[in-house]
Length: 330
Ligand SMILES: NC(=O)c1ccc[n+]([C@@H]2O[C@H](COP(=O)([O-])OP(=O)(O)OC[C@H]3O[C@@H](n4cnc5c(N)ncnc54)[C@H](O)[C@@H]3O)[C@@H](O)[C@H]2O)c1
Ligand SMILES: O=c1ccn([C@@H]2O[C@H](COP(=O)(O)OP(=O)(O)O[C@H]3O[C@H](CO)[C@H](O)[C@H](O)[C@H]3O)[C@@H](O)[C@H]2O)c(=O)[nH]1
Image 1: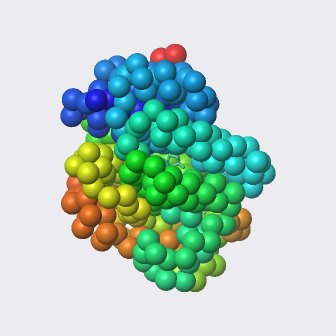
Image 2: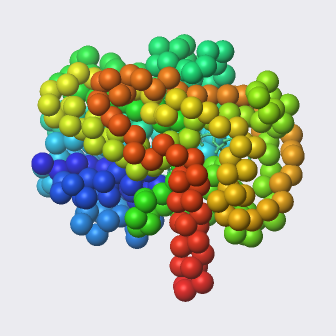
């Protein structure tokens, strides 16, 4: 039995590939390396460089590696880019996911895990956000993901395929053992950008909006550590292999931190008082989004191990230092 990890050369897929090989699973990664890195794939996993929408290639990989489950991470993930290039996002994230799903069904793969996102909810009035909250995605990125959830739901009803769709909240941190982390140089995620600023790689950290209706005026997010998230996928895989029913679950800790609170933690953990600029709101940012996080614990028995913002920030910082060392050595 082999798990096919699409997007396994990327940030979160790479942590999943690592979590799988760490517990002795056979893993094949399929990645087109558009934002991923071949060196991020664990050496015990096989890397196939190619496109997840290429049905001939995917069918061959499934056959040759006797794939029994697909963990589908491959996607374009930058919200403002999706606003500028919606059709590119619908092609890569929705149309190619359709192809992948069809290949899975035709090839007899019965277990499918999908990387969805809290971006499917959009601006919400309820806090924390439960899985049944009405979906109102604010960007083509969020819509491209919601459409894939719908395809999964329909395909699951029509075919012998069960799935777990995991809606990640804000993913951050790195492998606690320091083997991999978030490596995209132009990443826009707050904790990564704050780590780069603390190391002097950026002149200042911008706070996008301080006039939100929140406790300190800045946006509130639920930051989930990336290996905890990978472990949630392992639990999802075990659930499906046990014959469990299809599920759609939030992945978050159920607690929110504001942008200003995250900055304080980064300053304290790094010991650097880096410059911070108060800037206007960034388009498309909801004021607050925090997971209602009980369903995943009940359904999968998932128990987070790294629910600690100081630790998450320290991991992000350590990984950024590692990347700077790599760049100097290159
Ligand atoms: N990072 C977050 O905070 C976050 C939050 C919610 C959901 N997600 C979802 O998690 C998944 C992984 O995100 P990430 O942060 O690791 O991003 P990432 O950019 O690091 O990883 C995506 C990987 O997919 C690959 N890829 C993209 N299109 C492909 C294609 N057509 N064929 C083959 N490979 C392709 C890229 O090369 C890359 O390695 C995505 O589906 C994303 O929507 C991420
Ligand atoms: O330099 C920065 C970067 C971010 N922020 C703020 O920090 C918060 C978090 O922003 P991120 O860019 O880190 O994350 P988002 O909440 O925008 O989005 C992330 O989580 C979403 C789910 O909630 C989606 O899945 C999306 O793919 C993923 O990037 C936002 O209020 C943003 O305005 C800043 O103030 N300055």
